[in-house]
Image (tube, rainbow, N blue to C red; front, side, top):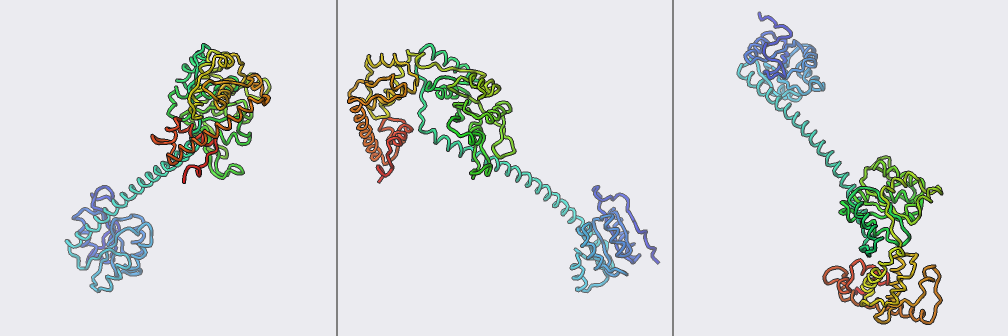
Length: 517
């Protein structure tokens, strides 16, 4: 009579997961069959576990997690089919392949075994070669499954990592897109601006330009002061264009032109829904100027609460958009300007002393035009040439008497007042000699000069010239089919910059329907 083997039989030299042949659980109530299988598997150094019935097989399989189960069909209490079904329902044992052991050759019995979850079967009496071949095959398949699962897990991890990288890149792309769109909108507003060089060679101007040259290559904050009309924005632009930031925009903000309730949104931007009317996200001037320069004109007009936040940005190099809890790092050079005495504003409690010291690292004061009278003649000739192009006129001379009058005037409005005076004289021009036939002193005080016969005639001539200029530009636009830029564009024929041409078209109220049919 066959002796029943021990319940837990282990063949030395085969530990699961260490490169050995693998672990096999034999579930069989016949001692002779178990002996045959043990003898067969011993040759291949398998680690073998034995269970005599279905109940002990379920416990052993869940505890030991074998690589393969050889399961007899005909057993007392729980038969092989039910044992297999329970193994497959258990998450800890569901993936273990099961081979049925049976002396029956009935096809229905085999089908029932496969339906219960078995992957193969061995028919009694056992043949050594068949047993080893089927056991090896299914253990190899299991190894492949493990390798495939590990590969899939690694692939999923890489896909997840790559997806996160792409998602982050998409977020950055979205931010860049919003920033570029905002920059585009901002720069479109700047198209009409004609940026000119600073004109003059007087000692006062040369001293100021020397300061510009020294501070431009640095990252230092600059405070530009000077009377109204001295050209503070031109000086700020000269600093920007001589710096390493010139490839990025110089973004401007006139602090006096923004209401107190919206100035923070203009500076720092806002999120959608940050306040009533914030229907979309807005990119602020600091973000637009990242990597470039932010020019804050009339900085003394900022509300005190905004001054506190501006000071923090200058100190920390980061800001929070209105309605957002996230800070954004920013690399911006700030150039501020004012026509007021900031020390007086501090004394009056309208400007913070700590912000003043942050902005006033390198002060530049622009001399008033009366302090550089030697530049007036050169400036006047420059303005005459520019307005001649703008108005479509030929250049003209400035008489000696007119030039003396210009140089003697105090120019409280500085260069801007001089430009306006020259433009008015060019519009009123009758012959080739520039003539100023109105009192400059009265105009400077802001009073309207009396309308004399000569002034009335000048106004009539001005209207007539504007009409002639308008007709001329409309005719050129008709010839070019409305094209402004390019070698055959209207700007080239008018001998103007495209931005100047657009400015004159807008100023003269020329509509598209007048030149496009």
